[in-house]
Image: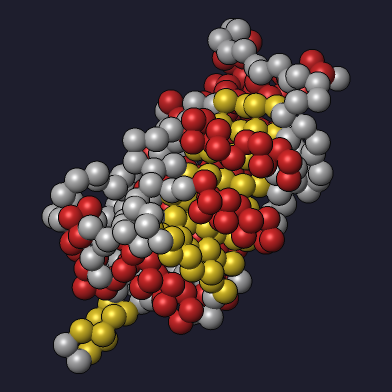
Length: 313
């Protein structure tokens, strides 16, 4: 039985690996997955690129099976009584030692310069104790993240809860909250910390006495053209939100100036603007401004976010 499971994991790993190595349209850039510059990003571009259909699953699977037969990959060997780790080309998964199906899933998204597996280290013990499946991608854009989640039941061999929790820090917070805008029906809870900018859940913005369209990545007016779907406001307002930021994280030179008219300058002001927008949509939101904290997260703030998520999953 164990050999059959290991073989199944190997095949699924190859399927996802080929999707990464020969991504085709999966690799199409999406604003909202744009890395956040570390310094002086006041002239950041805001161009957008529509998403394209994913390549054929059957074609990828055929290539994966061929690679297995050639012995081109090896599969992870589980250790009894310990969490099981699955390491793919662009994401990491930890399966808890004791699985309770349908298993809850926490996706953690790192900041600029980070990497999924190393970022996951701070969450592994907590997720194992809560019996959560932990998923940590490396630099995913919105559609790649969705592809990872859609393939997760096959990759883990588990029955999973239909909606996930997302935790994002900095650049990862930007991807996380934008994923929730595009696919709100797949998100149960969202915790974002120290994002540099936000896409507001609004189609228009008052300017010069008139309502003007608020286009992606600032708002959602043109979502249908970019993603093939408009904002599902009912599903979006059903998500539970936690927004965190350091009170000292307000240097305007560290955030792109293009967002200033809509959210203000600096991460703390922008977090407050995002919270107001969520409240305007009728969404439940907790807002934490951490005194004396700059951009980097503290253990206390991370623990508060995880406590919030635990109450939602």
